[in-house]
Length: 317
Ligand SMILES: Nc1ncnc2c1ncn2[C@@H]1O[C@H](COP(=O)(O)OP(=O)(O)OP(=O)(O)O)[C@@H](O)[C@H]1O
Ligand SMILES: [Mg+2]
Image (cartoon, rainbow, N blue to C red):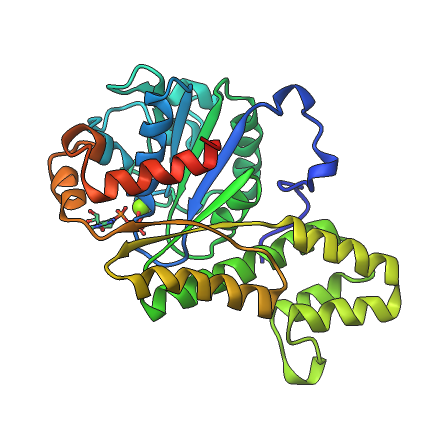
């Protein structure tokens, strides 16, 4: 099991970088592969950059990333492998420019075997240096699945975006991703406390333990210490991932996002913010084939309009 000794994640009240608070870290995940995480992460980054924000997009789909292709950046020798393989100690040495003046990329590479399995120490160092990058927006594209790397990058973000598609497997994976993140968040927060073993039990529920859900967990902790249970509830409520439904084709597809939000509230007690949807649109694939962002080739396509709407919502415009 991955060690928790390195406190990657800190609850908001314990952040100790007040001068860095203006930075916004957005991480894009989704549990399942191929839902459109990278398309949406790169499109959001392009949108922010064209609105004059200084943005870096980090391809943290370690070993399988393809953000450079979606941005039309050729895979060069400067990429994350240099940092992860200790060829440079500075993450900022791996920045490359893009066709957009304000947008920089930290590209993944698939050249190196084993890059997907970075050590806990390296992950901690990468996270520390991400916090120090001199950008207004730091967008992190994550790979599929619930690896500790994905969970930890998601948990350090100010906004965690989940990209789902309206099919049962994707929804199941979204739910599993949220559940895993929540558990890891509680593990960090209550590491070394008397409640740690209960949290671990809730991560691997067995009928005999009687800790089969987050509600069971809070109730058990409440019986031991009501104020600890309150802190746990606070921690759960602070976790507010945002959901984007991608590749929707109908009104009922759009409504699937509302069901995910309701189920998450009912079974995990947390507030998932359903921020918007992106329609299924062949222009997405066409622009990907041309290795260009959708805003460059098809700025008025349905998907481009949806993504602009989502960014407007984020920025409150
Ligand atoms: N709204 C959309 N309409 C049509 N096709 C889309 C849409 N969004 C994504 N796609 C297509 O789906 C495929 C997967 O997209 P993408 O690479 O962004 O997924 P991903 O979630 O990042 O995958 P992975 O888990 O492998 O990283 C691509 O071919 C992309 O063009
Ligand atoms: Mg991807």
